[in-house]
Amino acid sequence: MPLTRRDFAKRSAYTGAGVALVGSVGVLSTAGAIGSEAGEAGDGDEQSTERHGGHEFGYGPLEPDPDGILALPAGFSYRIITHSGVTKLESGEFTPSNHDGTAAFEGPRDVTLLVNNHELKGPRSKWKYPVPLAEGLVYDPAASGGCTVVEVHRQGGQVAEWVGIAGTSTNCAGGRTPWGTWLTCEENSDRAGENGMTKDHGYVFEVDPYDRRANRNPQPIKALGRYDHEAVVVDLKRGHLYLTEDDAEPNGLFYRWVPPHGFKHGRGQLRKLADDAGMLQAPKCYDSGGRFVDDLSRATKIGTVYGVDWVDVPDRDAREVAVREQFDIGEVTRARKLEGMWWADGGAYIVSSYAREESPVAHDGQVWFYDPRRRTLTLKVLLGVNPDPSKDGALDGPDNITVSPYGGLVIAEDGEGIQHLFGATDNGRTYPIARNDLNIGTEAEPEFSEFTGVVFSQDGRTLYANIQDPGIMLAITGPWRRQR
Image (spheres, rainbow, N blue to C red):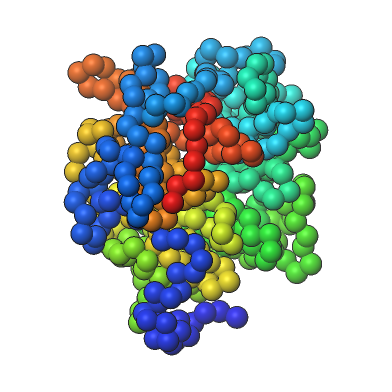
């Protein structure tokens, strides 16, 4: 039954303009949130261990790395797991470059299995280290992207890496499934014949880190649509999948896929679906007064709650018109740079990385929480426009995201200037966890690649993250503690 704007307005009137609809998860904000009384984005975050409500949060200031790779708080350390052009796959080829979305799985005999996307776009000749075309694992032999599976012994020691899928394009984010597989998403929708491609792209593929045979003859899950995919999460209770789209002109969409009646999720079941199975839908949001919201950037206060209806996508395979362009003004709600997602607390955390002139209101990052039971979106994190991205301590451009076992969120920064991994606590503060010290520019004009693929091991002891360029996977350990 759809949540109409009249229903939402009536419910909001009973609950104080939507404030009581926030739910059980803590509201997250930042020191530089738009509409807050704090100063500019990042103010105060350089002193990352403070007393707040009688409790310390954060881990202290970041200490420069003598090796020039990763600055961490005192007591923390890192080790390099894979390094493009340095480490090698089981087959002898070098680790592919441009590490992106990553998921961690519990392996046998004290092993962690990490599925690692490689965001490589266009023909293979464009890249020095594309994903190797492993026999039987190739979708389009002209494409350069894909995934590798990395086997890490938690106590250190030997690391193995092999191809999970090859011949896909611009594998950016994705999502871990409850049944133990990885859904890798193509953030590129080239048709066969465009940019040298021999097959259509813009799809989601399933990769099994436990069973290499299950990955043979890869097939796109066309029921989930063809567009510039970012991330995906699974609501196992209802069977729905939620997906994000990173695109503009017009801005991208947040999608819901509703399975056909009787469908049962499980290993390999998605690839058996008919191309038109179920329904792919886009959101139509309303504020507490029942007014239509055209773009999520309209929200300028932490705790803003929107009601959500869902509108069917006319042509999910975008045969003539891109999916996001199939809706007229007033039919759906858009957002700029819809990026990472993570399923926790009974819903989906969703990142909008930034908004500029293509959006109604500028910001440097939002994190929303979609509650499927209430059919509401709640703004949890809001970063004001960063006045000086070159300043250490300022934060902008959240991208990949995970929910921390120690409370709150851990977010990979993909903004301008200096790049961080940072946490956001449920008491309304942010704190740095790591800083990328690897300068891939020059001394006069430094440049620092984004962080990607942030994810904790299943036991919570290790935080994995990537430096996308040149492509380095890192394992971070230290005195993790509950952030209150």
